[in-house]
Image (cartoon, rainbow, N blue to C red; front, side, top):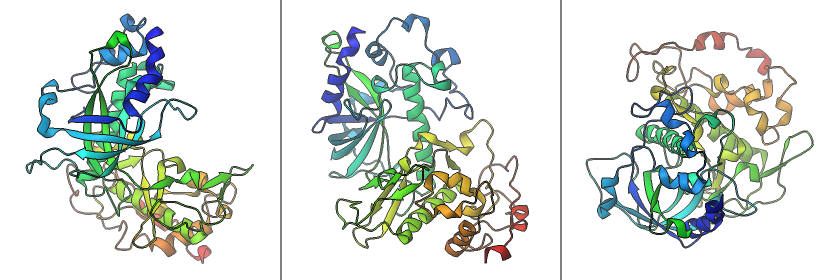
Length: 411
């Protein structure tokens, strides 16, 4: 449609390096949209779907028509609570050869911070000069029609679901104290909205609002950029010293280095499971590898938390680890089949056809993490009471899994 011809120029105007964004605090609904979650109490199924009267509207019209759900107009005039960002670089999205529909990921510098509120600590406070990633759930840059089950939802609902799902995951991880270094999740700096305008003359003088999640900027590269795949889809690490972080020396992607990154990833995921968040897309493109300047050691960060399920917010919470004092051992959560996209980054020979019996992987697990009943991971003595909230609806029988392990054959 004619109005949508200005979408590329809007992106350049709003999100190019040098552009500024003013953010206002936003409390989105709890995660929704996925079948695991209930719908918001104040949103019907019909309201989430594309209404017939919108069929003739352009994407631009729809983006202006629907603000983020639970948007609070009264907060827009409170300058004390606002954040100002300057866009430094577009990390993902963007109009051009690298354009991808969906959330826009922007590297930003903090120019202004909100006045501190000692009564609330729902996210890590910002400092002027901080570098952050603004994940902008702007419906103008989402696919006009969703894929799969997303086709049931209107454009702006899909953007809002992404905002709510990601916020829910990061809030849970922050409340559990496992965001920011040395943890797997980047630091969480809150959820906001930004008022934006259009270059299209038809919308002159009008403002629409988009949802934004702010997280820590991790100076690194995604894992999928550190290898190429051969004809068997095995990851082949890039040869020679590789520049991973802008402030560190290039590193050799040795087996020792690669296994250290996997150890951080898997132990971090298990800690997140224990604290009630399950990341459903643990893939190389969602993993950031960086190098700590002070000790030249790798740091691993798992992003893409629109794919993070928050257990206690689900319609039927599992409470799987509520009665265990420690996280599950990676042995119980990561078979070789869950790690297939990492073959080559980890030794490809660890996979033995279709067999689940993988002595090489098991040996590394126990050498790296210790035995499953160690003080670090899940013990088999269940707590008398859950760590918090009601008892689980069902438990995982880890004793049976441990009894089935063939330890002798791994030596």
